Image (tube, rainbow, N blue to C red):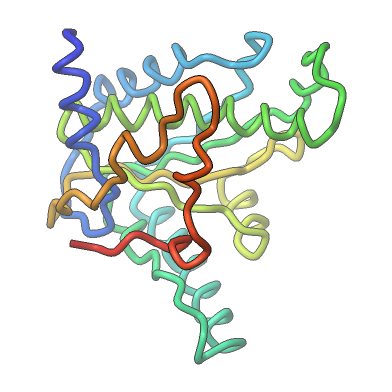
Length: 215
């Protein structure tokens, strides 16, 4: 693949939250997992583990788990809670649970502090997920990061029989987009790249620390 083709895949990847029914083959999933396999990791620890399902009943159960969480959080703070519903997790071609084996943190021989080990561990798994998402995008599939918060983690762990030794980090829906989102605005390269030393003139003011608006 030429650099231009890789950049095109990156530019067309989208966080999709509206899906239509459609099939994903074993071969397509295997290509995604092969991409994940090639991701870099600290000490070549390769901590990632993925649980994939195309079972409609399980997808509907995951949707209900997230709906229950949303309803509870909205009930607790009806005015300020702005969390997005995750109904789409029940309508996709496949659901992938991204897990990590936290025991691999012990092989980071030169990383002593627990917080640093945790940072590296999560970055390793995130590398694999991003590789997987780019492979999905190259085949025309949409994906999105879905956080696994403590409110939903126990039920997801039970539903998919995830061992206690593993951390359950993210759920990744994969499917054909019903509506392909437009590109969101991105900061210009010149705003966040600093040559030789940090340019304090580029440090964002407090009132600019916010979610970027949709187009």
